[in-house]
View 1 (cartoon, rainbow, N blue to C red):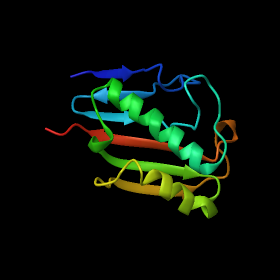
View 2: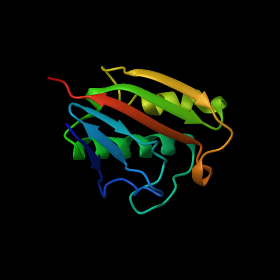
View 3: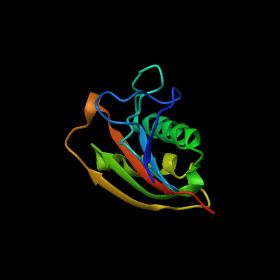
View 4: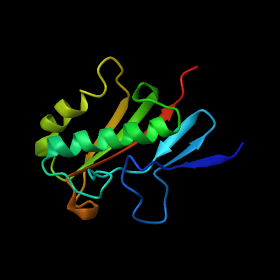
Length: 126
């Protein structure tokens, strides 16, 4: 079984030598996604940034035949955990009945000075 790089124009292109995601069998691993739209514009504010990232991740998953319902784990990196509640409220709009495992950590800085970055791991439901 081989791995497959996943790329969609409905999410920002990789800005380095990596893929938006890698699918391997019934699993997919995404790279960390920044709050950038497909045209390369960085969103402002933690709520809009969270929404943009999750829309991007949903598009990457869809390209590979997955959905947010398949997500088993997310990792959230924030530059200011004082904004955790606002991020959490936006995040919860994408995981209503399905609550994957999650890690949230504060980091000193993210690319393009974004306030948040999210990566995820999903397993296709049978």
